[in-house]
Length: 81
Image 1 (cartoon, rainbow, N blue to C red):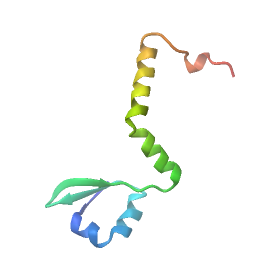
Image 2: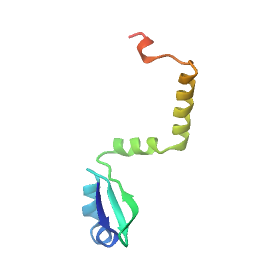
Image 3: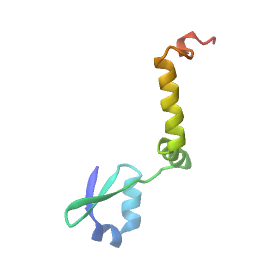
């Protein structure tokens, strides 16, 4: 993760967007973190990001985990091949 001043990002956005494909870039304003630039190497990376941050999906995952804690559901080890 690298930190870059907002003024530098504004002057060379394409460059930093390419760098963001490999690692997150913290954008600072007056020396303090103000945002994060995240790049995607593929459409699949973009899809994964959307899914990981979708409140509906996260709610379903939380519900599934709760069911497992209550002893409901099937362990993956118990599935037939």
